[in-house]
Length: 273
Image (cartoon, rainbow, N blue to C red):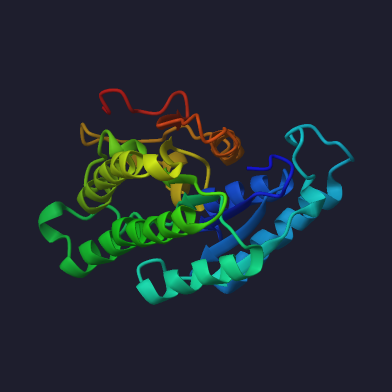
């Protein structure tokens, strides 16, 4: 693979939170990125944030990888996508291939926590299906589409990074649907790592705890703990997550971060309560 050409990524859930931060970081440092999400206007906001970051960056700004095009040469493409719908995922990957010709990275990020604070015995089946459809079915559909394209393209290969969670290891109270999907995502990551070896397709997973986003805003005011108490939890800058994803993404395909755990240093995790 020519290290000097612009590399191409798809970021799902790019309209907010971690997906937005990662998309902006990649665009800022020379990648071209397809932004996927359910709300087109939020994707355009992400693209505009990236353009603003590039406009404000001085020439040769720190953080741009050596030997790769500068961020000012990157391009974004916004594709409204519900990752739980196979036909929309197919359209997303077709649009990316038609625009950019290949795919080097899928950041499989789209996800939802589902209804918060609902006791397990009261969790509606429709809510369970919505979380599974987005977090697991969506991850499968996007990974499969990426796998097919990476296997067929020339040069062959690419990288998939799945967004796991601290809940891929240790659950929060009243999070059965979310936790079940994140545990399953770990199995998907391992299977893709094994199945992709003959085709130079590598797969890793980043497990994130308490990055400061809209989804985690409640953590700073109080979250239910394992002992039944409600306590505020520390958060970390979401840009620290974005830089970690970029590091994983820019490794040569001969190297892989299989699992990375990035969390706010003081959050409840080991033992969780």
